[in-house]
Structure formats: C-alpha cells, structure tokens
Picture 1 (tube, helix red, strand yellow):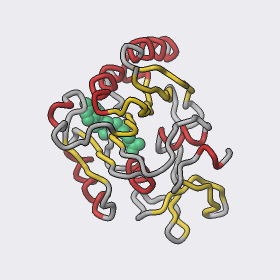
Picture 2 (cartoon, rainbow, N blue to C red):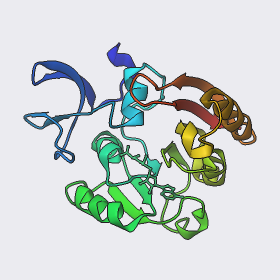
Picture 3 (cartoon, rainbow, N blue to C red):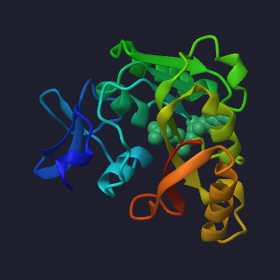
Picture 4 (cartoon, rainbow, N blue to C red):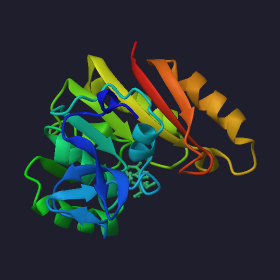
Amino acid sequence: MSNGLLPTGVQRRTIDGTERLATRGEPVYGEPTDGEWRAWAPDRSKLGAMFELEMETGLEGGETVLYLGAASGTTVSHVADFAGPTYAVEFAPRPARDLLETAASRPRLFPLLADARKPETYAHVVESDVDAIVQDVATRGQARVALENRQFLADDGRLLLAVKARSEDVTREPSDVFEEVCTDLEEGYEIFERCRLDAYHDDHLGVVARPR
Ligand code: SAM
C-alpha cells in the first residue's frame, strides 16, 4: 500500500516482526506496540480494513470527526490518535464506560453516551461542519443513521461507512442488502467508492461518500 493513502499520523511500521498499520498513543485493546507506536488491527476495525484495502478515505490527519458506534474505543482510539476533535457516539452504557477510560489519555476524544438515531440529543455538543463521519453501528437502518447525521458534515466532508449485512437482514444475500443500503444512502450522499471488507470482516461493505 502506498503511504500516500494514509493520513499523517498513521504509518506502516514493523512491530513484532510484522509490517502493520500503526498510530501513536496509549494501547487500548492489547495490541502490540513499539515504543509509542501501537498496531492497528484491521480484523478488529472496519476503518483499519478500509485502509488495508486501499480505499481512498480522503483522511489526511487533523480532521474533526464524528464517530458513530464507538463501542469501547478500539477504532475511535486510533482515529483520535491522528485526527483533531473526535466526537464518539455510543449508546450502550457498558462499552461507553470503557470508552471513557480510552479517552482519559486522549484530550481530543469526546465520548458521548447517545443514540445515533437521535442526533438532536448531541447536536448542542458536536460542532457543525465536521470533516468526516465514521460510522460502524452494526444495527438495522444503517443508511438512515448516516442520513440523519448528514447535517453535521461539511459540504466537502466524507462519510466513511461500514455496513454489516446481517444487521439489516440475516436471511438475505449480503450483496442484495448492500445494494439496498447504497440506494437508500444516495438520498443524501454521492458514493465515491464501495469495497467488500470480507478479507477482514465477513459480509461487511466499506463505503466512501460525500454529501449531495
Ligand atoms: N466501531 C467499533 C470499533 O471498531 O471499535 C465497533 C462498533 S460495534 C460493531 C457497533 C457498536 O455500535 C456497538 O457498540 C453498539 O452498541 C453501537 N450502536 C448500535 N446502534 C447504535 C446507535 N443507534 N447509537 C449509538 N451506538 C450504537
């Protein structure tokens, strides 16, 4: 992979004898480290997989990010290592508690215990015109969540979306589900790139889009 596709602050480094994506920050999930660098595991992170698969995320480093579906912070911790202010929305109290710990060493990471389907509950906190929305909610209605949060995105901002087919409908072919989600998404977004993430995450699609 050319380093040109990686934001400043994300590097390919040899850690434990293997070349891996890495960011600089406190370890979060038992990932291998080398000095202040810590490995970013693409099989634990859809955004990490998108980088490994050379998707053009448009991220350069330093961006303001709204992250939807933060869980305990595996991926969003890496994002906060290279991005600017990073607002991390998670609605389940248990992972949100762990997320608070993850944020303790990251002054640019702002955890929000909130439902991504109700953006009005965090609109007073999240600055408008964020540069990127990263979404990994793995819940039914993934296109709807992206559309409802579009209001936060700058006109030239990017949506980096991971779609989990089984969260929409376990009985349908993933490719049919992906078609439907992308069609719904086009109500508010122009899709630049889509790529199956199966090499790292079964039945997931990565999508890069911008607001219409
Ligand atoms: N993005 C995480 C990572 O890579 O570290 C993993 C996210 S996990 C696949 C999906 C998360 O989205 C879960 O923690 C779940 O509680 C959260 N989630 C699902 N629906 C949500 C909603 N409507 N609002 C906020 N969080 C939601």
